[in-house]
Length: 142
Image (tube, rainbow, N blue to C red; front, side, top):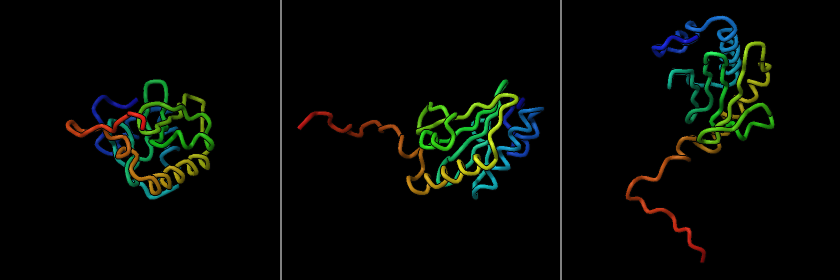
């Protein structure tokens, strides 16, 4: 399990894990990094991969590892176990001890997610809240 203090870098994040979680994160990380050129950072206390905005995350928790995509709801045809939730079309795959996802599928998901960010832009820019003082669009019918 990850220590309470955030890891200084991705290698330290992985080094802080034990057992099946470390093995799972190492496999996800290797497949993701092999799939596309991504910037890998520790953000919000877990691994985040960027390409024209956030693409995916890998987060080890007490009893599970989450493998999530900012545009994951568009990737459910590739991986039906992705569960929608949160902002930005987010969807995550929950992996528990003994569960796996083939490396080839991880690479396909990552390539497609990067392609979506190239085509659609940074997913976090699409969902920015309206600033105070900015007029909201009228909802009246013509």
